[in-house]
Amino acid sequence: MPRSRHPLLAAILWGGFVAGTLDIGAASLISGYGPLVILRYIAAGLLGKAALAGGATEAALGLVLQWAMSLLIAAIFVLIVGRRVAATPRWPVWGVAYGVVVFAVMNYVVVPLSALSKVPHFSVFSFIANLAAMLLFGWIIAFFARTKLSNRAA
Image 1 (cartoon, rainbow, N blue to C red):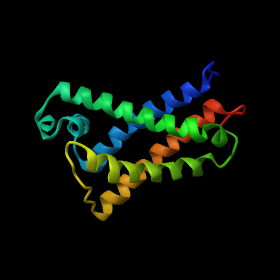
Image 2 (image 1 turned 120 degrees about the vertical axis):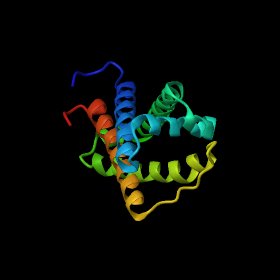
Image 3 (image 1 turned 30 degrees about the vertical axis):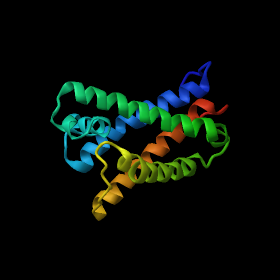
């Protein structure tokens, strides 16, 4: 990948957009709902249950919210530990560990405080699948931190 004049910003944008977009697909696979339904659920976190009956406008809001959260999550990682991660061959461990943190914060802080006020209720499958999705999410962010901030190739 070509070098950026703004490697921190590049790491945040690539990590946030790629991880956030793939997370929508993972949520679709895990839940069995289509991506537009997933996006309306995300919008419902802000608007409440009425968003679930919405259409394209609510789905678009959900996409904006998903990307905003993903960029914030990526920015926190990149700005706090990004350069340290880029300097070590153990970057995948950092990413997976961050995925565990993201899983816990999203499911036990963000979702319960949302307009849906839903405390997660997992089956064994959904717990493992959602945790795996967040491990991948963190790994992707660490990958782009490593790629964009490292002096050597990933």
